[in-house]
Amino acid sequence: MPDKRFSEPRLALNRVYTRRGDSGETALVGGQRIAKDHIRIEAYGTIDELNSFVGIARESVAESLRNTDVLVSLGEILLRVQHELFNAGSILATLPEDVHPRQARITAAESTQLEREIDEMNEVLPPLRSFVLPGGCRLNAELHVCRTVCRRAERICVTLGADAEVIRYLNRLSDAMFVWSRWASHQLGVPETLWEPNRAAAGSMPHPENS
Image (spheres, rainbow, N blue to C red):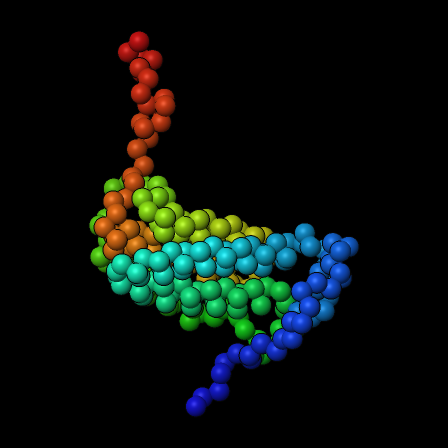
């Protein structure tokens, strides 16, 4: 059996609180203490937030499987993504000089896999004639929340100057979330909600030139 690429976690979480963060600081993987509002903490904290939303979407997939198995592959993908997001958090919580050779991280393989899945699912979708609004079903809306939180994480990582593979992965993941939201609706037979500018309040008012 080949060696695993990344080291397994070595944790002993016997206590939930330590009081060491009460002064507004936290520790990086290398032991450095930095402020909790540091851009690096904001980066992997947002990744953690995204992971939570992906977990919610995965539970929605699990609920749908009680009635149909059309979303089985999406549930498996979302679980993998959760592990990948933890790997991203690992590298973001570590200063470059402290990164271990076998430390969990994001590589080109993760982005390439997302691209394959995007292309495969996009093939069965009708072409878009307008932008789509989140909704139609709960899973669609949840995946759009994942998409927007992912974009925020990407922006923060760009500001941080984070690892290039992490930024590339987040960029591709947000695209994937968009495609997965459409694919989920398609598989469940739920119509997409297209953007109609004139559905706004102003759209039903007489045009000034005609008044």
